[in-house]
Length: 216
Image 1 (tube, rainbow, N blue to C red):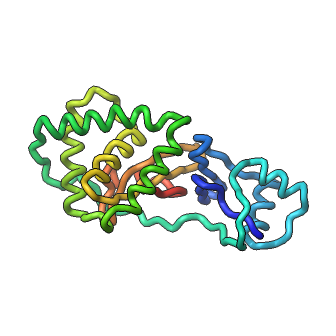
Image 2 (image 1 turned 180 degrees about the vertical axis):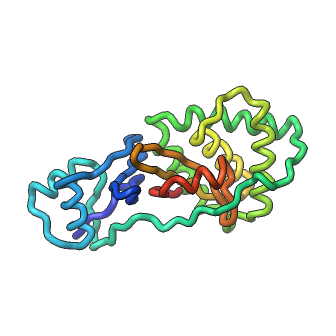
Image 3 (image 1 turned 180 degrees about the horizontal axis):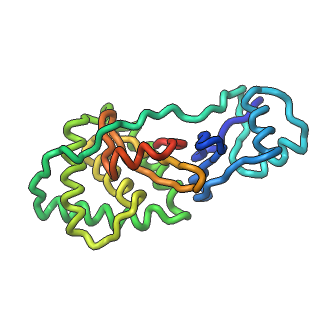
């Protein structure tokens, strides 16, 4: 028996701080002091006393595993390019309507009581997709979304736009990646959608300022 990250949990070292994201409780948590020392012993498969383990388990970030499992931060490469140089397509009313529907859906889908189920649904749909994202076709879809976005009266927000475009992408058979990132001192969080070659929501410059800790 061993321990692993609980479903929907990711972590990273950002500026020397050990930061976790738990999408099921919609919270970020920093492990400090004795909890961090206990976590580092857990990762190194060194023994922890019962008080240390009880403190770690109390965070809700860890779950029992049938076999010993390595606990490590994700390795995620953030593309250095975005859609700034992509041609702006002519977006018709049908696509603007589809983008608007996805945006209104995304505003509800990111509510704390729905976010985990939303991401579980994306994960299942991505597994069922035919293959990796076609980067050129996906970039064209993202550019069309950015153009349509101007006509939808919903304030820009990174998670809203990432979820909306993710939904549109999956419906077209594409499988992009939703990335959550953080930085510390001061703490800030950001998320974006990316393909293998480009950041599809927001800018690559902005995304590069954050350390990825969870990818869907």
